[in-house]
Length: 257
Image (cartoon, rainbow, N blue to C red):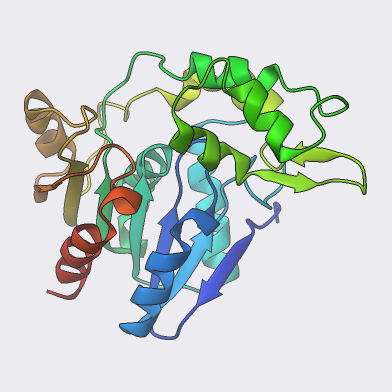
């Protein structure tokens, strides 16, 4: 048995698994998890490999992330799961649904299409690689250094949530920067062309985001014939954080209908 992914489980009821995006962790979804738990779900906030408190590994691609998720589901004896995936987690979730449809109930994909994207995290990776924890030994110093390449304060705060105290005197990142950087070309890949999931799927896109375009809809329908595509207004790529009320309402209504 391979290593089991770290998770936080809240609530009782129908299993709802949530997969975070690149450089994220399950904890990013804590407030949504508490609401879903109040509304009758057992929510699994999962850290994917090389993220959060899960194990680090050199290998990193969507096929492996899918097998990690399958191992997690088998370990916890889950059946007929609902699955939400954001960004990178959405690609893991999409591929999982096409490979293991018998494990699935409903799928929600948050602001990502099944296509290949041009590389667009180079500045973030370069900024992270510029951190020297022997010099940048406080969050304030790390933030100051990151600011040289990442002007957006929200993105920096998102990254700083990944810092923890490795020793009394030294901070570190929870994610495995080396593996994520070396395997970045895997992160932007699209869904393999022959994959199809015939179950119920909701794609939620941010109204201010350019990740799911109108011209992507035929590709979405090719892989997911029953897909609905809806827009969360006043939100960019982090739609669940930028407009949590509308995101939750749309996601919950889809899951329980």
